[in-house]
Every structure is written in C-alpha cells, then in structure tokens.
Length: 246
Image (tube, rainbow, N blue to C red; front, side):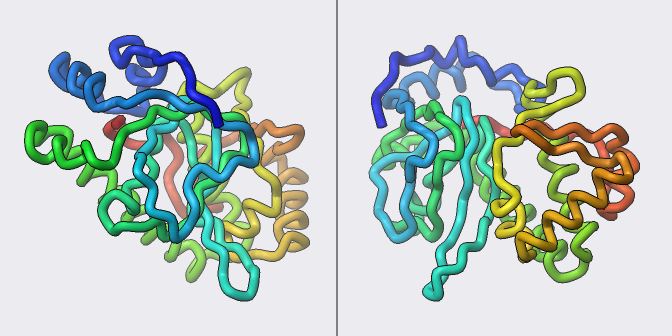
C-alpha cells in the first residue's frame, strides 16, 4: 500500500457520472474536510480483513475488488464485486470489526476517511448521514436479491443475472468502450459468488456464448443484447438507479 497525492473532492473524476446522485456545494466542501487522504494498493492486496478492527473507511476511486467470507472448511463465498464509488469498511465502523474481507483484484485508488470522524457526519451533516443509511439499505436489498438468485434461479439464470447487473453498473460508471466493459474477475470468482462449481460455471458461460448472449474473454465483457440476457435472468435491463457517493 502507498499513499497518493490527493484529488480535491471538487475535481473528483467519478462524482458527476450518471451512477451517482449529485452533491451540493456544501456537501462537497464537507467531504473535502472528511477525507483524510488517498491510498493506492496493488492487485491481490487485502484492503480489509475479516475480523479486523480497521481505523479507516474507504471509497473506491478507481479499480475493482471482491468482498468475500472464508468458511472454516476453507471454502470461500464471494459476497459482492467491488466497483468504483463503493463505500467499504462501514461494518467495522459501526459493528467494531469486519464481517468479510475486501481484496483488490486490480490496482485500486481509495479515498480514505478516519473512522473516528464518522460521527461528525451524523452530528453535522444529516443529508450525508441519510446517504450512509441509503447505502446500508441498498446493500441489504442487494443481499436479498442475491439470496433470491441462489435459492430460485438456475445456473443459467444466475450467471445471466450477475453479468447483466455487472455490465449495467459498469456502463453507468463510464467504463463502456465499444460495447465492452472491463471485467477482470476469474470464472472462479463468479462461481464463488453464485454457489456454483467452476466446471458448471464454465459450461454455462460456453452455452451463453454459443447463443451470442455473452462474450467474456481477456478481462472484458460484451453483452450484444442486454434485453435478451435480462429476460433469461428474470430481471430487467437498464441502468441502476443513481446512488449516493461518499
């Protein structure tokens, strides 16, 4: 890990993306005071460790990662895919310790906030405190949707759902290029997120590729017909609702 030169919040490269709700000038000024610095980490770095009591919270400025839990038998459950704009470390900030691990899959740049300053948000910035509540509620909603996916969608529907959601989020983050978005994860990561074996995941991806619904290779994902893939996934295509950025 290494510290980085700060980008002023007023010049934040992701703040004005369609993925995020706009901020008032007062909110931007507060975030500049709240921000303690920036951190750059290499791929493979453990940013937050399950069971740790981190003194810091982070917003992902660039790069991608994974949230995962390791079971006592050594098996891993991927909880979520970490993308730019995600706020991480809130569990440790409120519950005292992390309940999952956050790992960098690519080099990442993180905005750093001191956990001890978190209460200033609730004391002096009710709008920002509401945004934190919204973020926590959105995480709960996503976990509920994931639970429904694991319990009620078959393997093809699970993979279609995950890739459809990831593609839509990455497009809203300005990551699209010629219809492709970066997806630097491994098939094993997708399998661990969806409760599937690697073999089953690979065969299902091959079937979707043969139907010209998904093209995922060399770290990039293309979905030629988002509506068709969303129909298989039992969901709706289109961008996610704008969300707050901390």
